[in-house]
Each structure stands twice: as structure tokens, then as C-alpha cells.
Image 1 (spheres, rainbow, N blue to C red):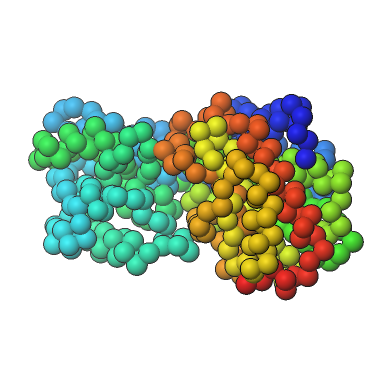
Image 2: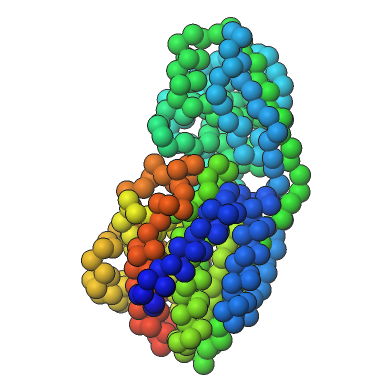
Length: 399
């Protein structure tokens, strides 16, 4: 890898383009399309053979949102993919599943707080959705509230209560100050207006390939889409920058095996991108997958872990990690695209970051928080691991 200032400047240039000039890149948006076109152009300039894997997705926008109680407007955020609504209705606060089971929320506005709002509810189609989350969704759909509000207790981290195109109940999330006001005053009724629009859209993976002397392939990947209200510098323009830097490096220094550089879209709200990838990809020829998601923040620490990997592969990765004291090995975490490889038996290594939870998915995830040196650290470590794996048989890395 290029350890010079110029190499780090190139990494930061990619982040500034994606998270700065383009900005928010949620699926179906103009920013998402612009980011895909930028990645395609960069890969073609490097000399990769590029495939665009287009897939349908919901396109969603919000023109105006308003929440009013006792004549006072309160801060709120329409949840991604929420249908439109304008309603004045009684507010019913519910904090537990038991309370929701007993509450009469039909035609009313349910305000979820406490245990029910302690974390975002996963989309119905998300492969990591829990039985508890399914129970909450089922109860809401059965009881038929006019709308659902989720209280957001944390500052400054912000997470929408629902982000699901298959959830048909209008929904919005209220930040801490507004939630406190509603729960303290307990108004008889509130007025909610969500002027949203949802229609069919599309997004696309951008997959660049370097042919090797072997049929077997190592896949390097990163998602380029973002959540709704974030420029997504650490999550995950930095990962894409690492991906493009590795593509440029191996175009000049061939590994010997085939290499695929997959920029996935449709990660944040559903695994649309990685599912589209596996419609044609053959897991049986993949030596390993290396995913980048969340590395490179100035305030964070680069991390590495493995899933569905043999002891030999884990030892190899940890041995290389020893030469990079600024990065640490962590327990496996499933919340990214490497899980889709591991679920198909493909050993997967995942680069991420620790100490930055309050930044991800927030407006604070800006390009000025990214370290070119830390991005280069992750890219250099990944390049070393690739060179250790390039001659290995596919079976060697399987758990």
C-alpha cells in the first residue's frame, strides 16, 4: 500500500467526495445514484472490469413533517419509508410489550418509549430480526394505531424507531426533549402530519474485477449507501475509500488469484445489495470475503474479526494484526454484509471501528472526522492478508 502522504490524501479524497460533495446516499435517492456513478468511474479508471448489478428498491422522500400538542410544535423526524398521514388523535404511551398488549391504540397515536424504544425495530425482512421485534410489529399491525411515534432517549445519537418499507403504519421518531414533553404533559390529543412520498426506485452494486491465474477469488467489499440523515463518512465512505485504494494497489501488483471489489448498496435498511450479488456469485469459488464497514475514524480504533473461518485463517489474520498495533481483534459482530458470506459458508473477515457508536447514523459522521492514516492502516493490513490467502485452497479457510 502507499504509505506516503499522497496515498493518504487519495483515501481522504474519496471520503470527501462521497460524504462531502455527495452527502447522504440512502437507497433510491439522487445521492445514492451519484455515489454509484463515482465508484464506477473510479474503478474503470483503475482498469477493473466493472459490472453494475441493479436491483429495485423503494424510493422515498419527505416534504414536510409536523407534530403539534396543545398548540405547540415539537421536534420530530419522519421515519424512512413511512406512508403519509395527517391526523389528530389521542396519544397512548406504551413502554413494554405487556402494556402494548393491553392498550387500546386503535385509531390513536401510540407513543413507544422505554423498553419498546430501547433500540430500532428491525425491518420485517432483515435476517437478524428477533422474535421480540416480530412480536412488537405483529401487535401494532393487529391493533391498528393511526400512527406510531418512537421516543429517542439518547443524546446525541439518533436512531429512527422504524426503517421498513414493509411497515404500513405511518411512523416518526421524536427526540429526547419532545418525548419528555409529551410524557410529562400527556396531552389529550396530538396533531401529526407526515407529507411523504414513496414509489418504486432502484439502486445498484458496483462490482470491479481483476482476473487472476486461478479460478478462485477473494472478495473485498464495502457498502456505499447511508442512513437517511447522515453524510456517512465513517459509515461508510471510509470503507469505500479503502476498497478503491486496494483496487488501485492490486491493479499495479497482481495477487495471482482473482479479486472482486464489491461496492454494495441497500445495506442500511435491507440487505438488498448483497442479496443481488449472490444471485449470480458462486460461494464455492470464494477463498474469503473481507468487508470494510466503520473503520478510519479519528476518535475510533480500527477493529478486525472473523466469521465462519477456520482456525488457520483466524491465526493468519491475527498474526498480521500483530504488525499493526493501532488496530485490535474483537468478537464477531453480524450487522454488516460479511454475515451474508458467512451464512453461505464463506469465511469472512470484517474491518470495523470501536468507540464511535454515537457518531454512526448521525449528522455528526462528517468527512473531517476521518483519518487518512487510519484508513491506510486498514488497507495495508487487508493487503497483507490477501497476500497470505491468495494461494490457499478454498477449503482451507472454511470453519
